[in-house]
Image 1 (spheres, helix red, strand yellow):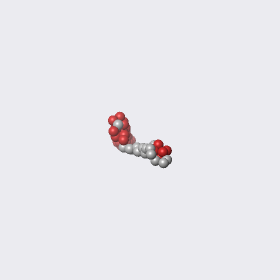
Image 2 (cartoon, one colour):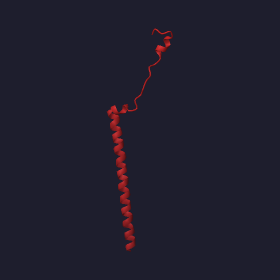
Image 3 (tube, rainbow, N blue to C red):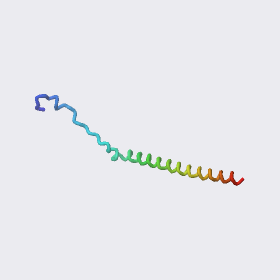
Image 4 (cartoon, rainbow, N blue to C red):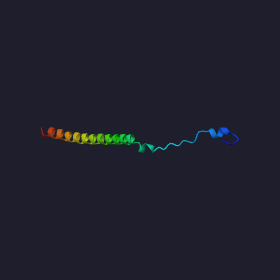
Length: 67
């Protein structure tokens, strides 16, 4: 470096981090996909459980009222 203050040339270059760089990593994309699929499956199971629970509650009320 031919500047008067040579230490200025030795400063680290500015490093930029791309927050979307994970898209290029196949393993990270696969992990995110599996995580989303797991959340969707758990949500579907909860919806089915709630529906079945409501149906059983109605059946229980019908049996109680028929006696």
